[in-house]
Length: 173
Image (cartoon, rainbow, N blue to C red; front, side, top):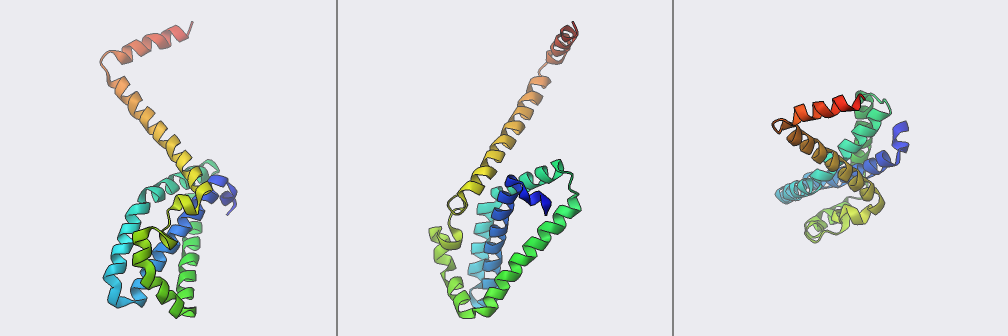
């Protein structure tokens, strides 16, 4: 992917693929340790809710950057799908090649999730530079949204539109 050389896209994909790895690990644990599947489902939902905003911001960052570079939406989806499948296959392979070690990891997930350690360490600690980029871009996005909201409120005030029209007329001179 040529567009992943962009620092914002590279940061976003690094974090996104890590999130996919954590989710795939939890799901694989649920299949491998089926008697504790309900526990893994709960961990999965909690994690998913915890990272939802970050995933949304990643989608915004990647979508905006690839759009600016003229990358087709389907090309982006195909690339991300391929990267995601590779991460998921790596988790499955690890579970198969080291089943005892993987089951140890699975049995430790509830404690790690509760303590925010291991796989569940805050993304800002695990990926400080990448998260900083995402958070800066999120701040820019919020600023734009706030300004758009402010602008629409201001423009909806009675008489303001005609007053602005007068200013536009003065700009001609």
